[in-house]
Image 1 (cartoon, rainbow, N blue to C red):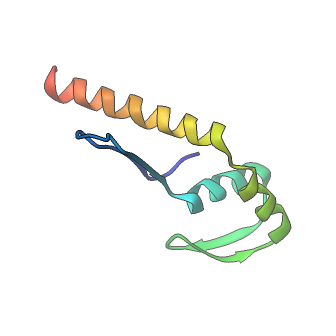
Image 2: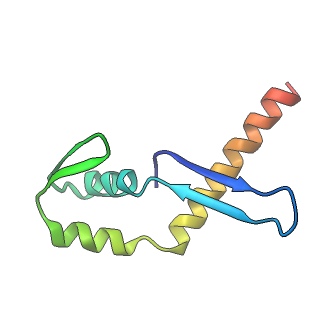
Length: 87
């Protein structure tokens, strides 16, 4: 899963966490990998060649992919913190 996303962790009780990623971008990357035909403009699909295949891709995203994206986001933020505050 690629594209914009964020992981927001609350610093006060009850320590809620919120995760967001751009689903359109994730679908776009998956369609590129499968060689599916589409057109998009500003995060909107204006044409999809095989709607059933895209629907199958969308429903294939699950917990594993989300956990991988969260882990990637956390590593990136940790490295940015170390770079900015520690040098």
